[in-house]
Image 1 (cartoon, helix red, strand yellow):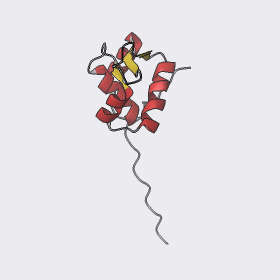
Image 2 (image 1 turned 135 degrees about the vertical axis):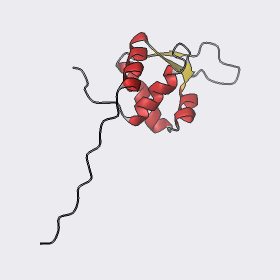
Image 3 (image 1 turned 180 degrees about the horizontal axis):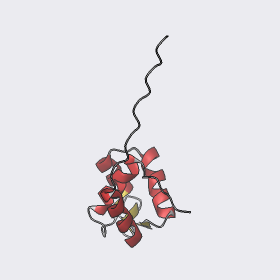
Image 4 (image 1 turned 120 degrees about the vertical axis):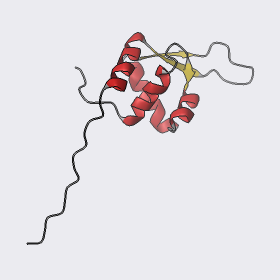
Length: 104
C-alpha cells in the first residue's frame, strides 16, 4: 500500500536534517536538538522511517569509556529519494476556517 499524503512537518524536519549529510550517521539526541523535537516525538518518527526502509539504523561500535553505545541513523538510497521528493512537493493548501452561521 502506498501513501498519498504528505508526511507530518516533524517527519519532514527529520528527513531534511538527515538529507543535509545523507551518508553521515547521526544519533537521535543530536537530531532532536537540531529539529527541536523531544524524544517522545522523535523516536517514533525514526522507528517508522526505519520500518519503511527509509533509514538504516545501527549501534555505535566504539563508544568512549563510560558511555553506552548510541543508536545511529542515516538515510538509505530510498530515503534519500523520498527526502528529495518531499522537499520538492508543494505544501498542501489548507482549507479556509469555518465561519459561524449568522443568527437569522
